[in-house]
Image 1 (tube, protein in one colour):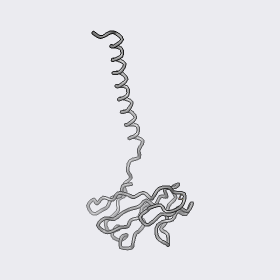
Image 2: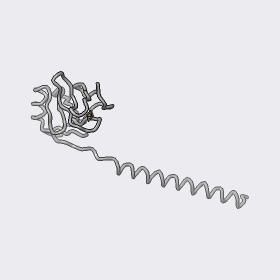
Image 3: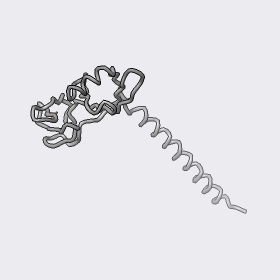
Image 4: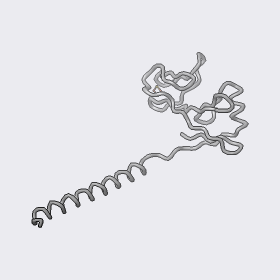
Length: 133
Ligand code: FES
């Protein structure tokens, strides 16, 4: 036989667990809603082939390069404060704002930027490539 005190203790634990689960669910939904949806850019297969043949080319805010079977796209947004990086004459990319530098594959080599350039996922869809950042 349980006492009133045991009953209230069980009730308290059950209520606490339910509140914790509800809070976790609300937090999970809020974080999912706050995360930006991936941005997609459609690239024609012909343009991607041309960019690869030229050793890489800018497409909007992306730089497309790589082997024809597995092209790659880098974001041209500097990871420091977002200025547009430019291909450097010595190879790789340079940011004109504060001097960050990146290798041809987007790895950070110098400057105030602490991260490498973002790499877009490229997925073949029919006659096009779709870049997702
Ligand atoms: S925005 Fe590129 S180095 Fe500052």
